[in-house]
Length: 90
Image (cartoon, rainbow, N blue to C red; front, side):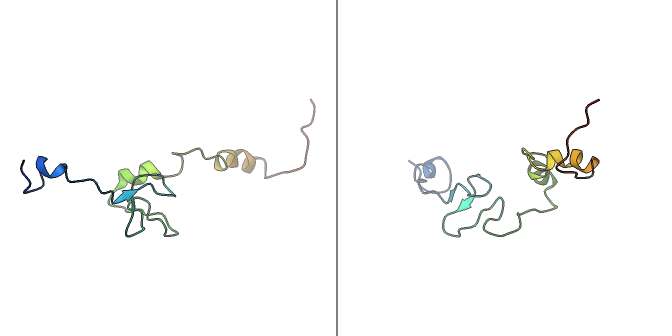
């Protein structure tokens, strides 16, 4: 078996995990020794984002998730954020 180089023979020796699941983004990008996520930048407060990768921004941006709060904002804004009133029966 070829042990020199980084080809087929070397793949049998690879059994240590450098990255595990990230608590914030859930991807397998959290570096065990550095304790930093290579995808979202956790534990930094701001999410990791670079303009040289437009496609990556598109995957993570607003509107790609559930938007459980923001989805109802446009309707509430249209009605002036009114609260505690009942609909008038026609």
